[in-house]
Length: 256
Picture 1 (cartoon, rainbow, N blue to C red):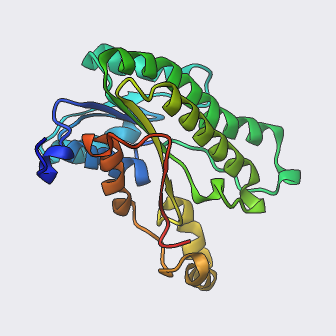
Picture 2: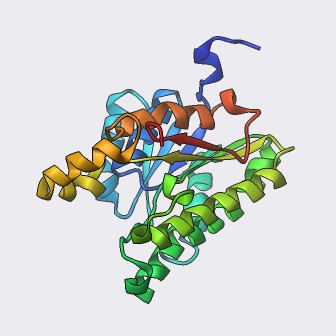
């Protein structure tokens, strides 16, 4: 075995799909996988939304393509996998990053908002796993990285439904990790804590004092993580470096 870091993390010749890669954590991971050598499919709800991530990857001298689909739509996950397989000939790495989070106590959550979160966070995951895992298994290599949340372990009442779907999502990852463990395919969850993304933008602007107070108690480091701090762990889970790890959770929370 070549123990050089650039060898065990090398993704040259691999093809990856990152859902929800038009911004935030997904965009950072897409760029990181491309930087490690992978050809990356950048998913967004519109072609225009994928443009900035694709342009950044092209500027790095790497290859990226846009794929479009609303993951709240039934079977859209299967369609995304089929598109990547048809265009690239194979899909080696699936990063399940797109998610829906609607903050509301359970009693106030509408049926529509509940269904939307279940469809995006859970049903589309099932569709993508159904479509991708048998093909990865036949080829003898594959990586699935599901982006979870620390809320899946310690849910707050305001994110009850979101947290429940994230816990169920990891349950799927664990069950399929066991199912495919002897085929060269691994499935793991990367669970971020508080990350500085546009989901927090309004709170930072409209409630700056509250935001500062929240940061002080959010984790041991007393700060929000950055999207770039998610990249190293994602590349690890997507590469040969994590070949003896499956069904696990890697938590990046600043201490929690």
